[in-house]
Amino acid sequence: MQQVIGAAADAEELESLVRDVLRELPGLPALDAAAYYTVDRRAGIARLEQGEGLPDAFWEQVREIQLTAAPYDNALIHRQPVFAEDFSTAAPRHAAAGGFASLACAPVVARDDVVGLLCVYTRQPHEWGPADQVVVPALGRELGAAMARVAAERQLRERRLPIQDLFDSVGELLVVSTGDGRLLWANAEVERRLGYARDRWAHMTVLDLHPPGRRLEAASIMADLLEGEEEQATIPLLTHDGHQIPVETRVRWGAWDGRRVIFSVSRDLSERLQMREERQQLLGEALHVATAVARTFDPATAEHARRVARLCTALARELHYDNERAEGINLAAGLHDVGLTAVPHKVLTKPGKLTPEEYALVQTHPTRGWELVRNVSTPFPLAKVILQHHERLDGSGYPNGLKTDEILPESRIVAVADVIEAMSSERPYREHSSLADAMTEIVDGSGTRYDADVVAAAVRLYELGAVDPAA
Image (cartoon, rainbow, N blue to C red; front, side, top):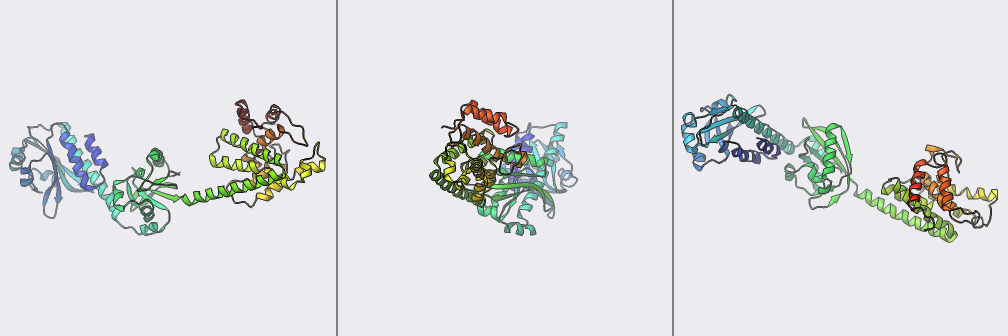
């Protein structure tokens, strides 16, 4: 029984639906053959459409049944199942044609109309017991429900709705599917970009549009949608020839020709990703130029920036930042002292302690750096991170005395890395401390001057031997 129900549930076309169901019926206990008749009410007959286990003589002699002929009329007209333990008495000619001893029939009702007749036969006399009298009508109901579903889905695919013209004109890839993921319709952009012919939609599900390795993830999103209103994902779409298109997809419930369906709208990210790669390349080149200038102007400052950038990348990974964000922090750290190029070289290379006036000049470098890069187009807050890398959570930093949430998380990472590297590196105007002293400084300031999570990450790296400014 479950195999029959499964065949009905999995069918995608009317032509295969009946065939797949009939193939399963002879496998049920005691049954030897099965037939399906299609009702032609105008002609007043039911025509033998498909069968399993039927001899040629049966096909020749029982191809048509009058709707009013006994014992079939009870099913075809009154919508009641028929159970004939002695088929030779109920319909002698039909029984002889097939060599069958017993017959059971059930009406197949779709959209409140008898559209067919499902018959099963046995070659040995069979007493149709209570279980049979439940199963046979249930088979007819399952087949009728499946036929109604398949017909409705075909109608939705083939019927041209006014809104389809609008959907065909948009640049996004739009797919309409049933609650269980069967494709009903897709707009022209899907056909153009993915390369699937429209006549294939009936044989596909939403999962078929995704790479095999991502289908479980897509199924999870569909499952979440059943319990909510909208979902969003960035699972690539798979073209007919096997290529992947990066997309951002929004999935939500909607109505389509009076039926509740799922709308999936995907925006192609290929151009955006290409632009991001180009922008990253330009930023990388800008960093290269800036560091080259800094190296020429003050090699020690350039080397300090390189070490801070390396430590910042390690901290970002330890804090589980994604690659794009970690790359942004690396870039900002590499440029964090670019404003020092505006400070007189003699001040930066002066041996001994700086005067208050000279130290004030050095303290202008975050603002000078911000001015140099503020017009660079990037999704990462590059200029702000450079401006804030000397700010402290308690407001004791410079240039603006920002506090706590006023300071970007990325700036807090650069601040900790900068302190560790600067304290443990030798500078002309400052005695250099050990790495242990630098770690003591950030631990003592954890939660007050420095971000506690960043400090904790730095301590973990230090304990693993991954904090080595001299490397």
